[in-house]
Amino acid sequence: AQSVTQLGSHVSVSEGALVLLRCNYSSSVPPYLFWYVQYPNQGLQLLLKYTSAATLVKGINGFEAEFKKSETSFHLTKPSAHMSDAAEYFCAVRGPTGFQKLVFGTGTRLLVSP
Amino acid sequence: EAGVTQFPSHSVIEKGQTVTLRCDPISGHDNLYWYRRVMGKEIKFLLHFVKESKQDESGMPNNRFLAERTGGTYSTLKVQPAELEDSGVYFCASSQQFGSAGNTIYFGEGSWLTVV
Image 1 (cartoon, rainbow over the protein chains, first blue to last red):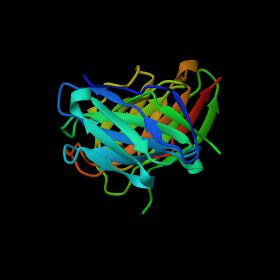
Image 2 (cartoon, each protein chain N blue to C red):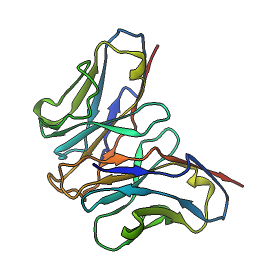
Image 3 (cartoon, rainbow over the protein chains, first blue to last red):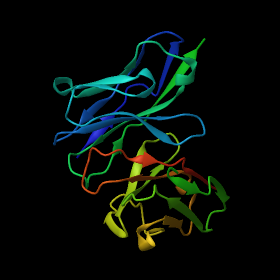
């Protein structure tokens, strides 16, 4: 079975500060890992994904995440927060075959203050 | 190109009534998924279609939920009769290539269901 744990249901940062959203996974098979974002009144949008290639993955809007197998982590970072980054972020894991479903974490709401 | 579209975007129904949610996947996508997020909880998988066949329906909560995908195009998710605990956001998603776990799964904006 696979699972994802996102530490912190809410994270608050100031505009211009580092964004760090934590995600730890559990998987008995090599995982594929994803970060999705949901802006207010919108659907889920893929930010980035790890699919066993480079461990440092760059996504849209300046976000990146690093796969660390030894720590079973896939934390999402952005060097400098922008007001438009305020949204809810979801980490998800999936197995290496196409039949396996995405398993999501509980989400982290990012609040950005001026 | 149109994304995944869902209808209705919001629905308020009384306990015991029936609601049908519709999802139109991205054109050409064989894989179609339904997920649900109940207030404050994680987004949970409901089921997965490959074309018109149910590949995995392990997440369907009970027999009040019925999903169909006739002809392998759009899909419907019917809840009958609706209960209070069915309230939440129902997401539909689709992906292109059968059997490839790395392919992006595209989500719709969700159908917000409130049962009163």
